[in-house]
Length: 278
Image 1 (cartoon, rainbow, N blue to C red):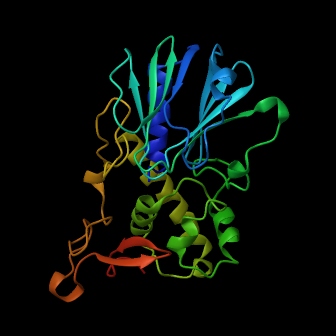
Image 2 (spheres, rainbow, N blue to C red; image 1 turned 135 degrees about the vertical axis):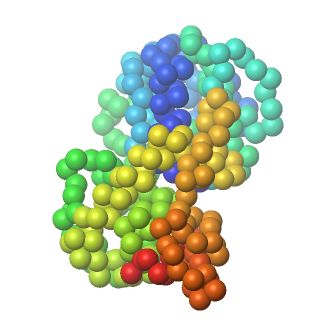
């Protein structure tokens, strides 16, 4: 699933390529995504001008000048493609939005994604935007905030980091990488972390996410940037998907430690160095 850096990369690409253009046509070829695309979506957005792009958690919000906000979520395998000229439609291209600055194509083989809208005049957010925690780069949160949020959580810290009510956007890859950088074992109970450790962990979360954004995200399976190119942060992973290898900062004996270990926490693959992470 595309995580915060991948979604941020896509949002930025839309801003640069499509910009504050006007939507002139919408072609829907398959409405059956995670939730059915609303029947009236074309009439709600055709003729409207894009005013602003925003990322909230792993959602892309496109605000229009008629108070409609278009919402995109990529699910497990969704992709956004941007073309300056109309291109031949391929299998799993479910929606094409034509603007005065080019075409936005929503492509999703598994159809776990989302494309919908809400009316900002009604001042009622869709249910899936409720109860989201703060953004990791929010200057209002600090180590104390994270420490307090974790006090009632006995689950492993890796699982707690994936809880979108604590902090949004930290997915499986970046949780493993951040915990490694913070030298914290993913299996530790979340409420066992000290204030100092929470402060260090939040700092490392921000550093890892910023590096990943600068690298255009991680391409492991389905993710591509909107121009078709690949992100390259996967080449900078320290532990994720590195089972049996030595981590970059370790000089331990691989014959004794087995190198980077893989376990499953909360149904998700988790990678760590048992020598450096405590």
